[in-house]
Image (cartoon, rainbow, N blue to C red; front, top):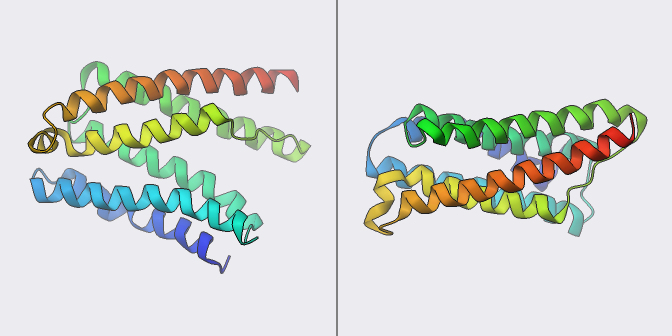
Length: 182
């Protein structure tokens, strides 16, 4: 547990209360601060895995906690985007699809884990994650981002739709793979 990648994973989780508070404040400074904290979380999401593999710091604790921390991090942001009305109406549908897929994949991994059946992350799933992270960054800024990019909210929605399509595709792929083992 006591290594840099695991500390980064735990740190990402510990920032969530502050991120939630910032996302719920309706002010430009709070949106920019939330974006900075969210971006830091996204960077550590990439770095913790890279550092663990590169410097042979992989641990059972990290293998357990990192995917859970990633899901908690993204789910928290998605729920806050609905709560602060940056996503509403039809924008809730992608959130539901993304959350359902995450629960499905977690359930598959938990169910098949004791049987030593693993579901490695596909290249498409990595693209899904990257696009989703960019989408959420735009949506965290909401209307405050239009001072920098006029189409900020629209870009966020378009990227979220793209991420949702990839979410459904990768979820279906994982589900088909899981059905083979049943």
